[in-house]
Length: 351
Image 1: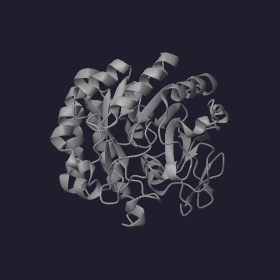
Image 2: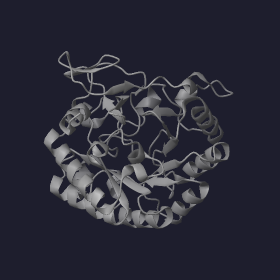
Image 3: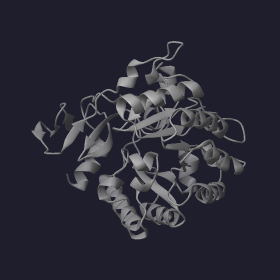
Image 4: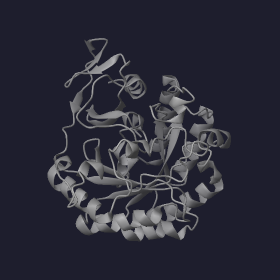
């Protein structure tokens, strides 16, 4: 598969619904999960796409593209429930072929229309009834144990909506990590949160058992941040830099990552330069194309569109080249979005 085809799939998506899929929630969503050329791929589900997944092949306007694609079966742990009858599927989901992912608190203090990130739909999956508001540590431990035993899960990602406390949600993350590690000691876990006001919280997460951390800024341009993330942009870039530096000290080089979204209006040359600077200080810049999906202000209000394919390919190639130069790859992360790689083109270009 050519890189340009992988970029087109990331932007145009597919018609059809693979067995493992997701609608609404935190992060990139409205996708189907496949293995493409052996790599995890979270591909948007788009009824207008010229690409179609027919269960075995990816077709373009009805013609077999020749792309090597493999469907991921519905995980067996989805058939289980907690003691109170909550389906395991509502507590954590399979991402890609081997990643267990959960949002431990499905609400966010920044979700009012004047504050929320315009690409985010974290509370929409809660409103639809496909998840629960707060995941209990013991329930997450049970799900993780089952996902490892029944479906061969090899890593876990825990993110959270932002809370009103100084920890910004990290304390509950730490409780959840401890419970899962007690049940499945060898399962690598990445935690994701905003920069906590008290940086010692980062050490608390590491001591709880977290193996990696994502502190996601999405853009390094303050004008872009103020438009797309009016609430989150109140946390300054200096606070992000301080949190990244402390996280690298605590977790180590290339066990810290941040999302950078292509297509929010940031100058792509500036994005590339910023990504290289992050990599040089030990933070993996996870390059992801902005994904328009229903339930977000970007689509429902702004009618925003996906970025230009050439921009996505340029940023991905140039950042990947720098990552190769300094010996940093997503696959070397113990757990997390970069280790999975499904939402990015970076794994396809050597990043």
